[in-house]
Length: 155
Image (cartoon, rainbow, N blue to C red):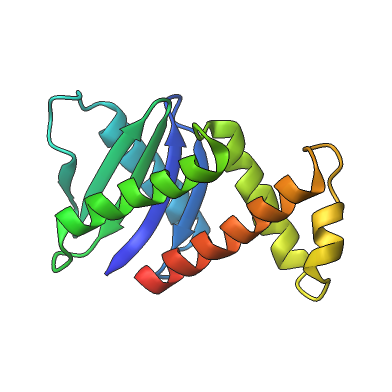
């Protein structure tokens, strides 16, 4: 079972985090700092699977972004490793070369989604004139919905 999903930049700043088990906020901060430090300290030649406390870490690096997934002992490491790659392929398909800025924009979409659930998608697609055309934004919102479902189904 997936315990958490993190997207981190090379400076060690968490850009996206999703937990599938309850973890207190102060413990999340400590856990993220320790996990990030562990992954960033490893070289590219080392294995992307790490035994860490009572679970395993699976990570992949894409340019300046690290994607780290914490799983329990019974989960298939290679399946999660491929899941990470498929997740990035979907992001690349819609953003063409996904960047840290795009991930930040996905977080903004998540905030918009959670605060405006009752508002129709037509209104939502015309809201941010600062990002680009309305069609682009509505496409990003639909990708966000798909990714959110994919990540929650994976748990």
